[in-house]
Structures are given as structure tokens and as C-alpha cells.
Image 1 (tube, rainbow, N blue to C red):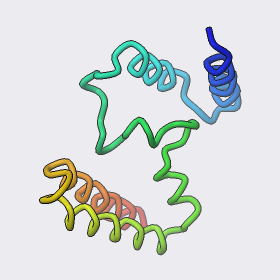
Image 2: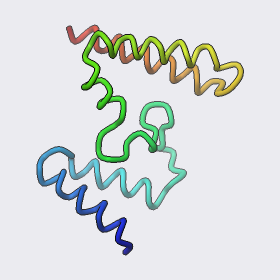
Image 3: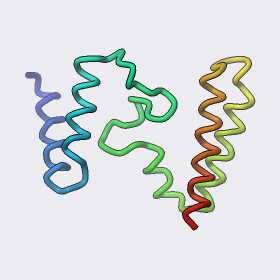
Image 4: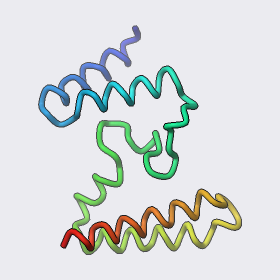
Length: 112
């Protein structure tokens, strides 16, 4: 096994041991990524692979850093971006991404 994989696995183990990550989730995601890179469980709208490296989804980190009010503005801006470009770039996937951001705002507003 290469040095990079060994470092990554040690980092994952440390986060599991610290209770930051669910071991079953780690196993599922690693198995899916390694053995089935084109798996039907891959979801480019809700959980794009390139946003979950490092053990935390980028959106969760952004939300934690911005706080509720600024995060809502961030989500609105992203929804506008995806709605504005869907006919020229991403098609249906861009519409789904816009809906995802709007749903995130709705979910957060229901938590208050």
C-alpha cells in the first residue's frame, strides 16, 4: 500500500477513534469509492466526492464558519447561480443543485 493511502487510513482511524466519524459510514464510503467508482450510490448533487475529502463535507464547514444568517445568503446565492446557468451548462443537474440549496434553507428555517 502506498504511503499516501497509509497516511489517509491513519487519519481516518484517528477521527473514528475520536468519535468524529461513524466507522460504518467510513467503510461504506471507502468501499463505494474504491471498488465501485461509478456506483449508483454516487450522488453528484447531494454528496459530491470532491467535497467530502478530509472527513467533513465542505458545505458543513462553510455553514459552521458563516453562521445562520450569512449561510442563508450563501445558499441563496448558489441557488441563483445554478438557476442562471442551467440552460447553458449543467441542465437538469444544475436545477437539482439549486433545489438542494433552497431545501437546505428550508430545513434550517424549520429548526428555529
